Image (cartoon, rainbow, N blue to C red; front, side, top):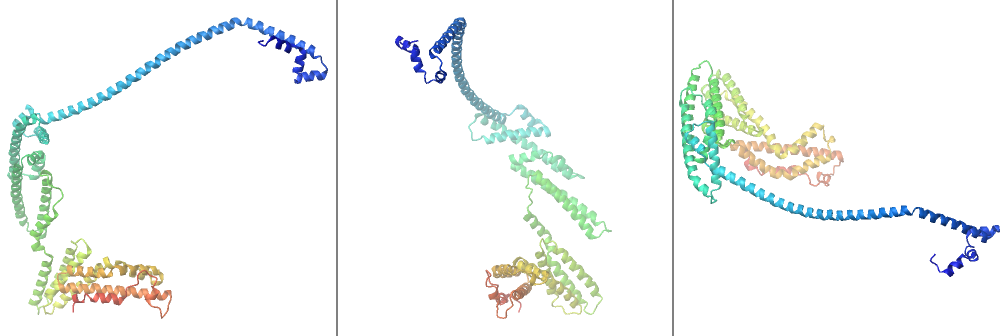
Length: 548
């Protein structure tokens, strides 16, 4: 409708339109059917005018609705503008609130730090005040109160205040300087009362028919905090109390055990061994009870002083319990009987009974040692001492005596030899026994022989030196020690010769050849087996220590 008039007139011309739309599909179909396009165009144009008129009428009809819709849209725009303003204000308010929250958070952190610091100062001041404040009630309780459980509470409070004051001595606190003299006066008064109380209780142990154990638990242990306070605050008084206790208990136990021993001596129907056992049981019970009390009351270490106890025990009992003393007394006694009764044979059966009982006693005494080797060493030294004492006696009955102790000595030496070799050549000995149990070398792999040979080759020289030093050290008699060493090294030669024989047998089984030597057969081993002759040459170096 905005086109120029000349262009509109041209385009409204049917001829122009036909030429314009002749490429259209519908126009082509109409032309193909021979229709009059001008009439058809006029018809179409009439319909378009009618449709346009209908639309215009409809628009006119709907104009009020468009006006109302326009008003609604305008109203919505106004509402949206109002909401936008409200949201903008709300956003501004939120920003302000966020800033205020951050400010409050900063203030909260600051106040929290201030509160924490004030609480720390308050706790410190409370602790300081509680530690240095001496109340009149505490003073009256310490000075005028009787020692009981309530008084112990006051003592604990005073001790705590003294700890606080001592811990802060280096700080220049005026209150501590003022309270110091008061605490010192309280300390002296407290120690004075504790001293009088404990000494009176300890001296009451001297009262006849007093049960010390009951007094210890019902009085001293009940108030053991008193002694602990004195030990910490006044060592001189603590030493006096401890010395008074020791003297009193020494007197008490001396009287009690003297009375008990006197009573035991009157029991003639019991053997001395039973009386001795009863006396020692009483001694052990009382000593154990007293030790536990001392450890708890005087705060002594619970770990016993083994060396100190051992020294005291040896000082008291060693003169009568020395191991060599019993063997010496038996040897001298048996030798004396044999010499005095050379022509009398009736003493021999009784001497044989004594010999058996003495052997049993030696066996029992040997069991006091912790390990088998020490037991065997004790028995060898004991048997050798008896034989030495009987060696110069030439009577008819001495042969039986010597035979018995020689047999016991030889058997014990044989056991010791095995025990001595075990730490150094245990693998070799175990291997030989394993072969014997297996029934021969055929069931044993050759690499087992190699391992046993390797273990022996690495340590045998050093082991010989260690065995020599060990044997000579453990036997007091040089003659006996060299004899035992000879037996040990001789048994080693026996074992190693046996090993070489088994190895030869195994190599013959692997590939028998008259021209093959052991060195050739074991060429692939990491270590060649040590020859028996080499071991024997090394053993002969100890010949100077052997018996001639």
